[in-house]
Image 1 (cartoon, rainbow, N blue to C red):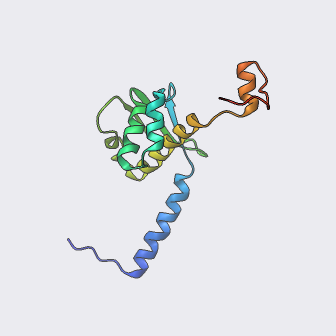
Image 2: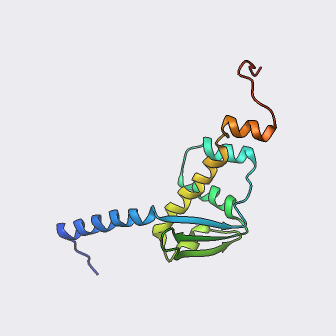
Image 3: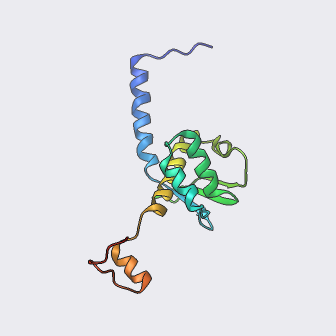
Length: 139
């Protein structure tokens, strides 16, 4: 079967794609029980290596292994996708909504960045129970 598109069709496709990107910005990720703790070296490796599709898949698998995942619309609270993941090809969980896969990978990468972000000086001082000295240098 042949498929033919004209310029008007392409404009409509582009408009719908752009509207869809706005929808993706309203998605939120919930990992029941929280994401898995990553080995610090593994987390650093995911951060330092090129941000490839293969690394995105590996990172997301490591974060949600043996977890239940819910992706929902942040305003309506409607569940868009819910799945439990234990092992195997995580991308198969997105067969009904492949348009959501890249957003899921980006959310997992965002969690990684949050984990690798140092605390503020005030938070660090409160956690350690001491006030950092501005004249002390690390050696």
